[in-house]
Length: 132
Image (cartoon, rainbow, N blue to C red; front, top):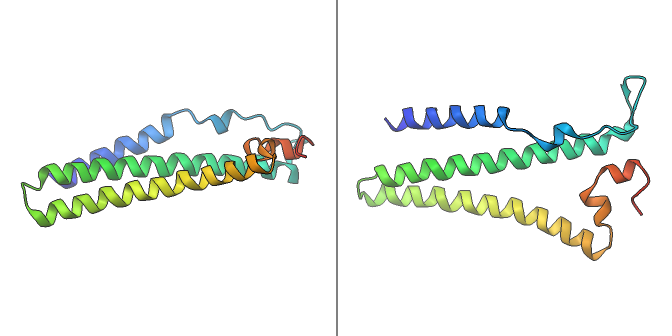
């Protein structure tokens, strides 16, 4: 039963990942494509798309793990070993999510302190000369 619930949740999560709009896909390629060929000026845009996709993936995995651990916690029936395992999964999922979000926060803090937030928040600024 638990395996069936996990498979169903995973299926709908994957479907949700591919059907949800990703802001990175609507991004303008600017002037980095010349005659239909991508140049090296496209690297920051591709990197930005990868980082956005990774952030969405990590968030989705954390939500799936929290749901899975919650189901395990409810289905444990008061067994201390199973409730401890469910609590560990919840703890590790939250710690992982906090680490990822903190890493983004540190990068933005460094950009703010060095007055280069334009370069960090908008990777296209590097290709268009707006990064100083």
